[in-house]
Image 1: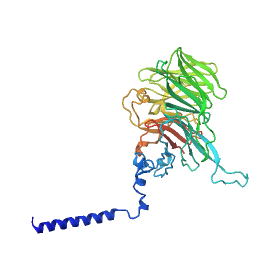
Image 2: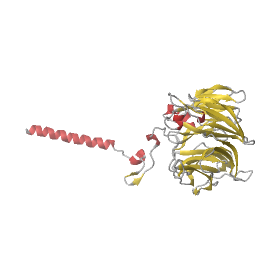
Image 3: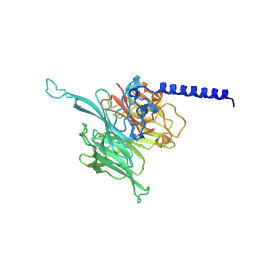
Image 4: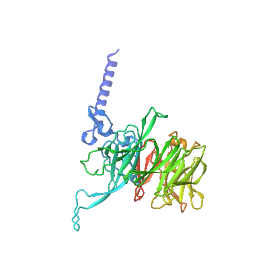
Length: 442
């Protein structure tokens, strides 16, 4: 090997080394305070370099980073970039078993004294309560007067591992937690427990600590519950069929208002005098809808004869939203005894009626529908929808899309829709992951 060749190789290596050195120097941040550091930028969960880091940054998920997501007691800023993002917010990523909302009043902070009344000025805020599946723990998150979600607080510790449902009543003062408990003596190998607990009322302030829930156990094997303010209607299966009771927790009194040798009903508590009762919907059998008169303790057939029939009554029971095994959504007029198309396809249980205007209906409706055994496959979790959200009017026949999450890279299969008392916001659970969401209707 010639000396000339060796010299050339050495020159190349030296030049390459110098180039790499200057490249590395120019690419290294000169001021680490502006970069925030590797762990701060990526915000990975777990341990990095022996120090605890924050949870995964929202920008690393498929959700817009300005959608609020609080799961571990830390604030995430909301940065509105579109009109939809201003209106649509995720309340929690917990797997939610049930939720409710309550309007409350508190003193403005920092305190402002009214010159005339000499009392502190107050503000209204929306308290959002929800129970977690698998634990039964109850959480609260407030929406303040500036339309900003505050920190998530756990207010009740129950730690029931098999909690499946959380049903709130009495203006958020009580909750029913339902869970399965092993029982070898039962034919199924388990029994359903329903615990009615009292939620602590003083949850305002930084010094509040979560408490253990206290209450009472209801009848065993309650499989269906519907609520009307501070009253409960529930169905229990027994050896002779099914029994339906109206229970008032305040007086601890219950009254048998329905019994049948046939099983498989679901209910909707409409008024003090009326309960809607439907046979469980399945795609290959005809379903029927009845009403129970809680005064006379009698029931009568309202409609039926369609396969996969799901029913949801308006507040005055004049109109019933119904869907069949094709997901055709219709309005059934109980006075005229005739139905008319609603203008979209969905399952009636994916809707919620306005309590202020009994003609207005809000629904989560699938963007695309394939031929399936409806509604069975959806209830059983065998299929999932990507919904758009609709506002419908049974009186005028009008229909409009409120928003479509898929257009913003969010996939939502809406269920358990409900509105606050002022009907300023629509709440719903995403069936895909159990997360709780809110949409501003103003």
